[in-house]
Length: 116
Image (tube, rainbow, N blue to C red; front, top):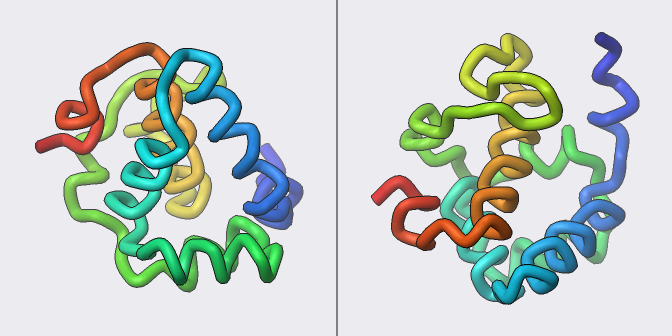
């Protein structure tokens, strides 16, 4: 699987889809942001900077202040792949974010999503 195309996609181009997916299911932009903050360590200001700069996913995750150590507790299938079995670390981080937004849209409690 060639991941280069995904890595080069602008985070800002996918971000609105995360928000739309959550809002269609009655969740909020703030909850999506809480997920992103938890996973990456970005705060509101630094997250907005990454969106404004239209950085790609590779840069977005490379610049993340940290990846939450509890991210390894994220399991399940997203886009036909088990996230815990994805070998490429960057692809795994991207799929972690996809999986968390998916859980939010499916109505899972935010405390459970954030593996508290």
